[in-house]
Image (cartoon, rainbow, N blue to C red; front, side):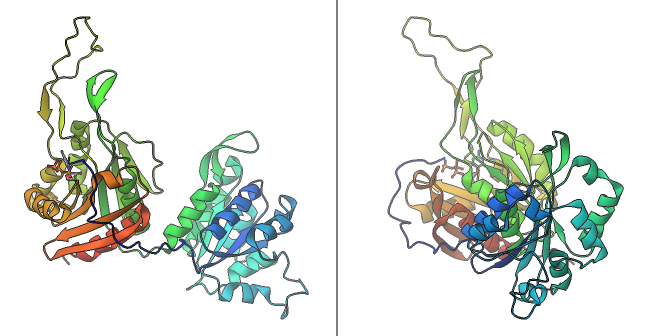
Length: 422
Ligand code: CTP
């Protein structure tokens, strides 16, 4: 891996940062449940992400959190009744849904899900859900209830029914519940719901595809307490995994030692060393269509890690550290027989002369696409600049946060990856 000072090569114009839900009109529906307190946070997250949020609450929801709180957080008066005389044409269920990009019901109680399953319309929120133009106003539902209620056959039947009718069910999560019991039924956290909504709106460019990603550094043990590693944060690889999952792909992420949260819907395999990363990647590679190697794999490992900690012997002599070269994971995958080989994307972390090094690396590793970046300028940072190098030439993705770049990269990959035969 090449790591040194950054150069001026990619000090390019910045990519405009648009909030993830800019321009989206979201109807946020609250039904009765303790998790209403999380809906307050969700309203804030959605507004922060650029969405216009219109809150609709059932009567039961108003027992848990006030409409005033939700009005203050969303910046709009809250609707609680279809009989609200202040609405000019007395048809809030029509007006609320005609310009909505999505309805998110969070929390969705067992009773509300049952009413959705039956197509009931005896209060404003279920009426709004029923009256929405089903083709262009999707319904997302975040269940929240006690674990026994969630596990009840009636609830499971109703959830299956609303999913069959086109609703997207977000969660629920497992964990400690307000009643003190532990199990399935907790509503997802506000940030998770906001991320899920952002993901929902991403174009499904990789639907039906599978993507294997390596990310982060590796750690090569010298003894039980020391090792060789590098400054890679794993952020770019995790962003690529998230963007691929948002684009509809089945994603497996092989991660070196990093403290990053697993993106939603991504299967994660944790490893430490380059050898472990290779051992994790090799059986997975033939099961995936695309392989994106973002990991900063250590080039060398100590020839032998000692079982016991190496101690100073008082003589002032330093221990000799013999190194062995690690296998090149990307090149190994790129050499698999065609029937087993995913479409490979490599990253090139360079210190200077990025385009030339990236071109050479592409040829040396035998991969169709190399993504170049200046290592020291990007490690640990939240933004980056990328240079795509393929058989046609070079293309720069200007400076942006890593998730924006990862989404742009996923679009570039989707445009290049060969169509499946037949
Ligand atoms: N890579 C890999 N296995 C290795 C080394 C690198 O899979 N043992 C992958 C990286 O994940 C990246 C690409 O190869 O996608 C290039 O990594 P980089 O560290 O930039 O290059 P090196 O191959 O290590 O070459 P050099 O150190 O000479 O720049």
